[in-house]
Amino acid sequence: MAASSPLPFPGADAAPGIRREVLTVFVRGLEVAAGIGVHDHELGRLQRLVIDVTLELTPAAIERLADTINYETVAEAARGIVAEGHVGLVETFAERLALAMLADGRVRRCTVRIEKPGALDGAVAPGCEVTLAR
Image (tube, rainbow, N blue to C red; front, side, top):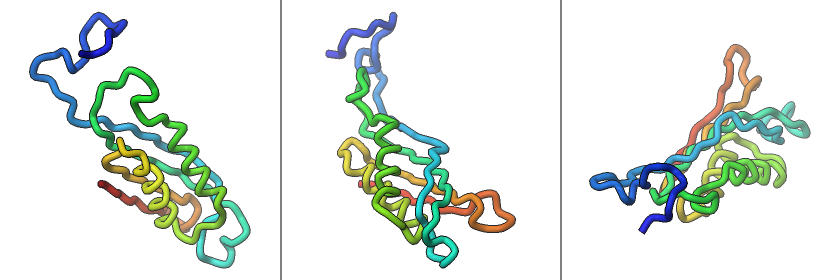
């Protein structure tokens, strides 16, 4: 039975014919300063990355923060990769972040998009996007 809600309507569990199909949690525009790049001029300096993460979770009733993925978990994982040291490619960074998110068994699919502003003259933001799923 669903936990009682302070709202004047029942949760999806109590609604006939309604089922949870997808729960998506996302973080958009997370900025970090990272040691990243393969060119000589990129070594020994920090560059701005703009990160978007989309997590598809196993659908479930969400009543407390512990029932879902905290946005801060995404930010901490990205900052943790930065703290590990220089990363050659944004693709590598994106895959590491996606794998970190998939360490939580509730995450069924993770898409990480990373923009590296200033890396290519004439482009607003070159970058990459990776999707990993279980």
